[in-house]
Length: 302
Image (cartoon, rainbow, N blue to C red; front, side, top):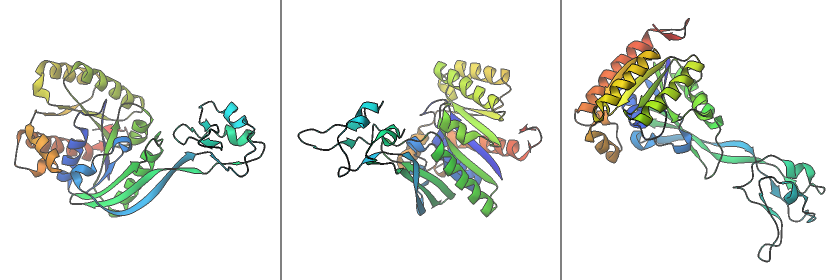
């Protein structure tokens, strides 16, 4: 099994649309949406949920009113102002769940031991079926923390499923940026495909993400989306990629068909042949060549 993670320096570069199209072309594949803070791969793959599991992360303080002595120590020690003092409308101390960081200081200093500290329910993860293969994805609760834990869980479940099925490929829609969720999604992957746009900010984002891949010794590949809206910036991006030894595997033209595919909730490669779908098909052939010749001894494509 070969594991490919598609990432970008920021949101909105076409990462999910490309991932969905590759899932359609790959055939023997398991898909995973590790962009759990803003998961939207399901909008294009139309999954049918087969299994749902709760996701717990961290803890949340909860005051028991019947045991509280109103000593006010919890409010005094809370650095996040998560303890709501009594008022005319609410006579008891309580915890604001959106402000509570789960540090446990109030639990430690409460003389009456009137504060519970259960695990926090942050969302759910799902195993679903699609027309293109299984999909592992998740949904975070409102204001819930992520910090890479749910990303690691989704990826772990996707790997286990791909291994169990003997799938040839595991394709992962990774989070944007260079933070903890991104690191959790790319660590140990066979290759990382960076998709960016031909703009000054897009070039800057590419350099940041490429440096992240270099730091973790991961083979990085480049795809330029909408390259034809600014050929000069596309050329500069290609030069930067060559300087960093990041192969340019594909250039996708601007194509209104991509918007039509999004409106229909389908991968663009499922629609009538277009410039974008043809370019993605060529990109996938290049990707397969790179993945199938990956050298596990050196950790880079051959």
